[in-house]
Length: 247
Length: 265
Image (cartoon, helix red, strand yellow):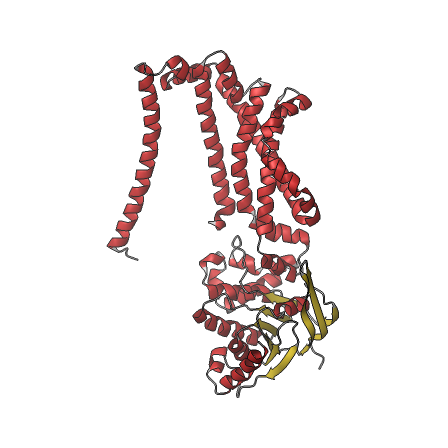
């Protein structure tokens, strides 16, 4: 099957007064439909650059990016607009795409109901907890029905407790909606808990060091449940060692 | 839900404190006018030069009877309003252009900074020469004073909008105009209202200076005229009315702020 996202031999440079920085040095990565892929690597290794490339916000110096379908992007912080209600925040993407109609608005309402934010649709973001805000941010992205979801450290602004709960939450929603997802994180355990594959990058310029296929026995298990399985620490140690050797 | 005794007490203290603040504020005002009146009536100060609240009151009644005072108030209020509305609109429009064009912004930056530091009232005589001895020149002075501050404040607001907020809009495929209308502008409404607050004060400065020079009508004219004919009651009364007018303008802005920027509290 043809991959839904395919990066081929991507190179990316940044220019500044102090010189030229090679952020990505030849990355190839195919992602198939429905897959959950995490990208981990040392901080500042160009992980986020790869997401920006896939989202089409920037273009590579060389290599090709092919993306089959609309992309939704989720950021480190929820970026809900304080001047809009939760419902109007969720409708933001549809407004931008001039696709706000009875159907899409009904779908947004449905998603808010389904994921427990129905009663909060007329609230302002600051009235919600960090976890609920992140859920609202995800629904804002899903309301435009993207085929591919890009998550840029979406949990890193939350405290540890909330972070575990929210990754269960978001992981569950993504699994239920069956959307292809690429997650960038520096948290190895988060990557293992959520993904089908974990891509380990080297430090800058980023290249693919290794790709781990993550397999747990049985059906879908929540990220928290996965953390308790015996395979979990094995994956963790393997990936951790790879990253440590690199650093 | 039942409030605990401690909480009721807390609320009571909060209310009491607010009343105490209001009472002190009222006392300062009453004390100021009371002492002024006493000082004048006991001859500690020369009432002819310093005026007194009762003399100002008599002046107020006689000017109201002649319908004179309100005419001057309307002239000043209208010019201040025109000056700061035009200054704000023009300032926001220029800020939008500079936000949209990084190159122009960098080219014009030193000129804006220097122009901002220049006391614009120094230009008032030139404007009167160019535009004539009329209310338009006064409004132009007020506009000139407020426009640069507006540009700088609003532009700073625009540029401080978090980059990820714009990137979010871009990830949905937003055009530059959409980013402005749906992200950058609404995010900067508190900055724009702040600029408006500063502009009211500045617009008053511009209008009063303009009225000093043009000397046809308005509270500024009354102040100059009153001091020239040595009617200090008229001068002091005009200043007091000017204070009240500024307070009214400020109150209106506070209401607008609550309505449009309440989310930023």
